[in-house]
Image (cartoon, rainbow, N blue to C red; front, side, top):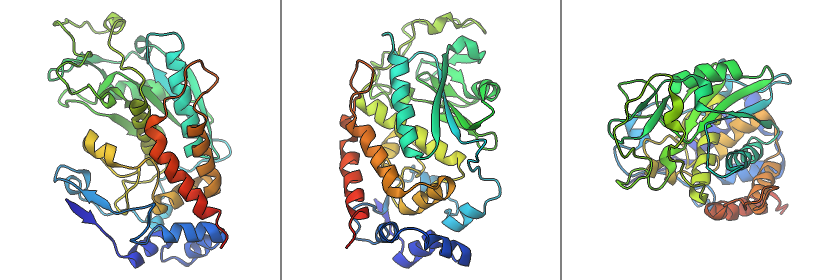
Length: 349
């Protein structure tokens, strides 16, 4: 295992930049916020730690590229920033998320509430759920895992037509597996950053997906007909457990972060780290490192403590207006982490 430890002065330069105007902008943070961000860069920080590489199949060795500092993020002419006419994130559910009445609405409402806390200051709205048939997308059976898959590119075409005029971005979510083209085995998601849209599947976040006993494997050979979506009427839907919700929240916020222009993080452990497989994805924390936090704050303009309070409230409000309690057991370490962050931010000594 390799530990990627950057010198503190390097991390400080990455956070503040070398441009005078961006250094001066950092000075506009409150005393508590500046102390919080800079202390998070220290080797003995309890909140932000170095990235660890466990194998050559991990993202960083498999995808060598220059890391993005705050200055290069800020200077990118193609990054998307919310403006008064485009400050709403829309979530589009594709297909069912469960057999029981209200399960789809309940699950996606939890996602919506989480995203509204994570991207604090922006509105997050749900579009009416659509059936898979309504998208007109191509589909297939994966020859390796023998489960149904949807064509991600076709879903992006559908989302482009559904995107409201006031949208900062639109994201489609489904529990059916995805593929980008015939030669690929699968893809967790696909996005068009310039168009401000993406589609993501949570199918492979089910703990049983890679087991031979996975209920989503088709029991018999099915001859598919293009445009005949009846095969999805009885397809397997994974149960809504705490781990699935946890992984879903992590994936959606990571991918929307890309739409803001935040690239894969290589500085500290961060939700914006890249991942090549589920084990690596599970190693990522649920929130941003100080450097990526400044990137998002620059784009939206929130107070750091207010955002952490909103995320903490989402966890602590375990029950919503719906009948089923929110499954937040997997979020309890994150809850403690948020409390520690707020303790430091509210310490005036």
